[in-house]
Amino acid sequence: MTTEEIAKFEESLLALRDQLSHEIKDVIQGAEMGEGEDAGDTETDESEERGIVQAEAIALKDRLHRVLDALERVKAGTYGTCELCGGAIERAILEIDPESRACMACKAKK
Ligand SMILES: [Zn+2]
Image (cartoon, rainbow, N blue to C red; front, side):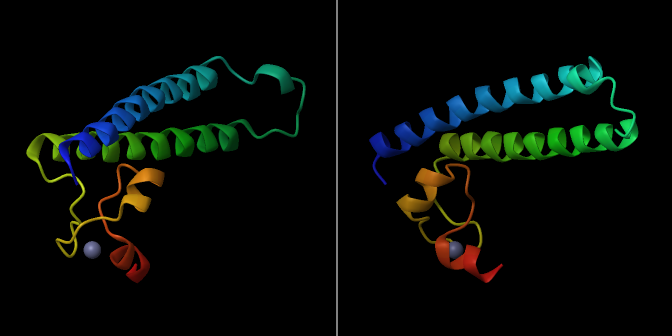
């Protein structure tokens, strides 16, 4: 990959990092504000709802970690290299999933 291409992916990663940070804040703030619109719904299990919010926040945080990792790899000059086989990660994968750590073949093996 050329430095220009890597710079483009770095830009997407930075945008993704900001977006995820906002989403995490929204999810957590939304949970703290309580039930919102379906406040009258007695069938809603509050603890279950909190569990869903937590799972959502964890999933977002996981992705944020992967994005931060990818940004570290950009700095280290190893971005776009598969962590499993050491080969190059296909552009098509990076375009969909810029924080990807594995190439197409290694992903398929999982
Ligand atoms: Zn691989």
